[in-house]
Amino acid sequence: DAKTTQPPSMDCAEGRAANLPCNHSTISGNEYVYWYRQIHSQGPQYIIHGLKNNETNEMASLIITEDRKSSTLILPHATLRDTAVYYCTPNTGFQKLVFGTGTRLLVSP
Amino acid sequence: GAGVSQSPSNKVTEKGKDVELRCDPISGHTALYWYRQSLGQGLEFLIYFQGNSAPDKSGLPSDRFSAERTGGSVSTLTIQRTQQEDSAVYLCASSPSAGARTDTQYFGPGTRLTVL
Image 1: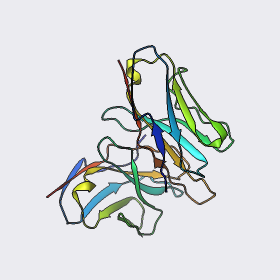
Image 2: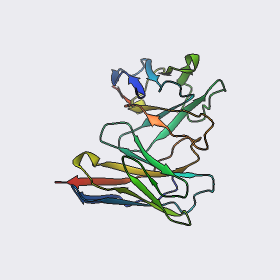
Image 3: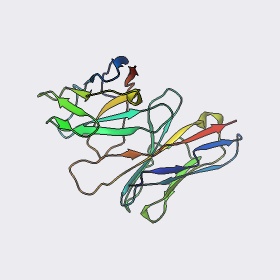
């Protein structure tokens, strides 16, 4: 029951910005866009979330389109440690999380 | 501060044995979730605890699976008569659920269960 579309893989050079897109065209009005990542053999790590305004924290920036049907996660200066699978998921925050197949980001030297 | 912790980190057991997996949520978090993740697969929801409310057990795959949460804090997931298909990483997440407009789940490192 995943409701998102993400590219299966992306490459990024170390130090460059990584822009990870996500389509969530069926998002409901009360659902936020959440982003998590999962580094190999670790539990999912929360990155950022937003409703309709762009958001920024110490890890990343989140750009949400005005119609809320898509968003982009931006890692401004990718490092090797950012290599992971990145998941976007619409969620009210009070529901079980559902992850799609995500985007496998590979950051190379 | 301390995050969600889980123990053991790895558990190898023989088919038919019972196992207990433990989750210590972030202090003060009232919501607690159990998920599992099989190799290369997505998250599979198992059970959800919220404060003193009855847990949402809708994701438990069979009656061999049960979970409890004592004192609104530590949770234990028990799998009886383990089967090989139970092999997976079992993940616990907690969230504050403090009346905010949304809520964020924070995950532990997981317990890797291998049933031989």
